[in-house]
Length: 587
Image (spheres, rainbow, N blue to C red):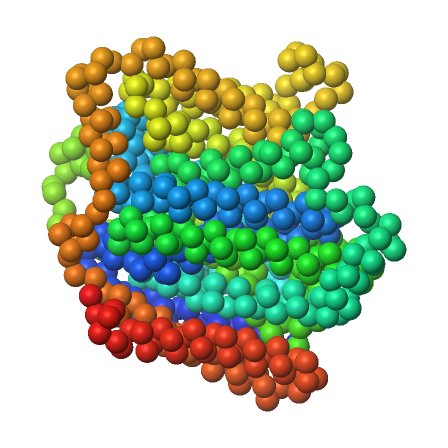
């Protein structure tokens, strides 16, 4: 067995959904009249829209591929990843979400300029654009290589199709379209994955039977949530778990996470958006491991027969294909596709915002270019989105010519070695005022020193470790975190005196960040009703589309699963349409 076969019906489901979300960009084009609308939805996004988008953009296809491989091989350890994300978003709910929204900016480099100054802002702007391009291309490439090996799709066709669709709705509808498609994808993803988990439990004979089969097959020790081992010793140990949870805190609790909340109406709505994202990750952490574990217990031969670099990464797909009724299998393929598309569209929109709001003004000033009007900047924003999307697509196609490690390891290394160094000072800078303007750059330099050593695989015995010690994930992450934090903290004694221009700027930034937003005064009229109704009607169309699958021949359990999914999506959509028509939301 080299590939999994799915029916023509599933292809119709996949194509039908992808066609539907292209219309989202067309509809939401009317929501953007200037660059603020295009890049941060004019800060008019409702909490449920922003929260679901934050949730969807926080993971890519690795949730159903790389992370599924972890669950297949090591059982409950994968829960730590998602619970770490839930913890990070919960801290946003407690206090940081409102802070990030209240920075009152369009891009996070703009916020950096108010905290560290213009040189640091330009470093981040120039660094962030290529790194996001690389990350998006890697995600698209990983998606293509997986679909090619597992479903037999042509890798180049997968990359081109998904890339073009993301490019189209992102360029057309901007941030509004990005958030709307994220919400619709989440509206399918969450109930669908709950149904798959329920089918897995039913197939196994209940929760008790799940643990019995784990014990019978001798997997109890292997499936422990935490493996025994030294702090820096290996995967899924306490050291690894600590690194994953700490990484979750760092990713979601720094100025770098700001774009997740720039689109929301005010600090109170940001808090609710963060709580929604946290709750969704908590649900995911409790159910997403079930299909790959079921695949290990019941379908291990099918998994290992696949011709893929890491067959375990196909575990979620195999369990879904074995258990889902005809029709819904196409939707799990859609879930895998759109999980990556959600990451790519957010990165694309954020990147173009940096180009227009951070890099272009510097170039305009340096070369004495003519001032552009808002309509012109909006046109250029759409144009740059198109060109950058094409570049990401071409880079992913180039990557597709080579073979690499599993998706999971690649994403972890990119996060630890390329992303963590620039996030560290953006976390400390929210809490420590008394630093010089170059504190962030020193922190980054120290962190990248460790990143470079890890990348070059410098022997660890020079640091006192055993001669055969290797760079584990937790060693890379904690090494980078420690070096970056020390670099930031040792700059404190060199901070300018209180009352200096720099300290005054920092104090003003912190004061602004903690000052609640008066939406009607600072933003103006909301469009909550339009958001609810437009997205609600799209959701209703999806519910009808799924409901039509009831005519497909399936066993009773399959028809019940389809009916349940259509009913859940239809009920939520009907509530949104009704709420959008009530006077309460006409603000």
